[in-house]
Amino acid sequence: MARVKPLMEVLRGVTRFGRLTVISEAPRIVSESGFAALAAKVRCDCGVEKVIRARGLVTGDATSCGCYRHEKHVEKLVGQATHGHARKGQRTTEYVIWATMKARCHNPDDGGYPQYGARGIVVCDRWRNSFEAFLSDMGLRPSKAHSLDRINNDGAYEPGNVKWSTGAEQARNRRTSRALSIRGRTMTVTEWAAEAGIPAHRVFSRLNKGWPPEDAVFMAKRGSVRG
Image (tube, rainbow, N blue to C red; front, side):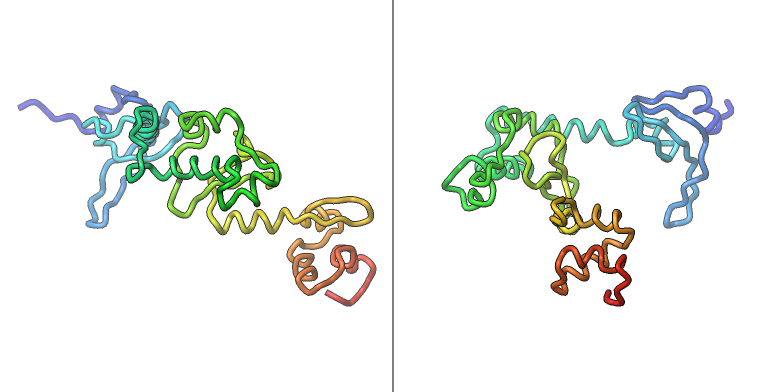
């Protein structure tokens, strides 16, 4: 009877499986039932490195880090929009987000227009004219907790100024980007705190207590016991 080669011996002879390149053997992956599966460290063509069960390479179940499946999903969504399948009741979440983004910026009858379009917030032509371009640039929403977040709150919806963020991340970003004007200069609270050499949370605490901005930032440097 012919000897069956050990799995890792097979892998040593072949280093590439689909988009994955085997870098080295890795510690076994132990399942909840206690089974220890042979593992390999691999690098995907997209640059991601991860440890996976080695048998998946041999059986063909593992051919990428997951990026291939993601790309196919995006292609499917783009195809739905392109071929008219984004009708009411069949729209994907990403499509709805794209449509509402445009409405609040460019439709005066939209409920969100006063806070967006009326303030001069617009959607760049690339995204406004193409759902496919928006989806290509932004990718799928990471989770149900994520929504569009502009890095510069006064800037447009455009590549480089928009990211997917959770509600907690957006609240934190708004908080740390709060601007203060002191002595003829305007900077964020975080920047003022760094200049004054005090923790930013102390400045926020003082502002919440009603302190004037200049006192909130610089009072400690004047030797005051307040704070």
